[in-house]
Amino acid sequence: MVANAPMRVFRWDPSFIPNRESAITLVWVSLSGLPIHLFAKEAIFAIAQGIGQPLLIDRATAQRSRPSKARVLIELDSSKPLPPVRLILPYGNSAWQQIKYERIPLYCDHCYHQGHSVGNCKRRKDREEVANTGKGKKKRRKDQRLRERRAANQPFQIQLLILLRSVKEDEEVESGKVRRRRTPSMKLLPGLIPDRQVAIQRKDG
Image (cartoon, rainbow, N blue to C red):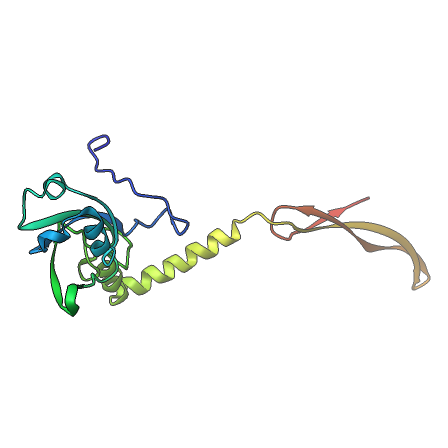
């Protein structure tokens, strides 16, 4: 416990993703009815390797003071199905080994967290409920607008066009009179600013 919150420590793996809880967990496994000559640590580890990675056996198993079962701590992937174990005994005989897992946690393949199965995943149920109601459609439209707004707010470089409007004075003759005609001209000055494309008109003269 850290600050009154449960904390698990597990071995780092190259496939580690920060927002996904690891499915690797430690589980005590009981091998009931195991033949007494197989209580050696090497034999138990060889059997347990069919389930996961064996780490240690408990004191009673090491001292052989509890012949009814052997207990071994195994590191296994709780997201995968648990295989049965069949023992190959001397003289060609074989038998199924009874296995009991002690408090193996459930793992959800939807939200990637331990503690519940996919069928009881609250996030999955909430997503399905929202998708099947009118609120789901409104929420999807709202999310789309939000994504568009966020995309519009992303910084980028575009061109600024500044329109310089100057005036030329020409003379023309109309009905025997001379009058001045004002003819605007336009010039483009490109630039770069982190904003939408704009055009600014400015009069000179």
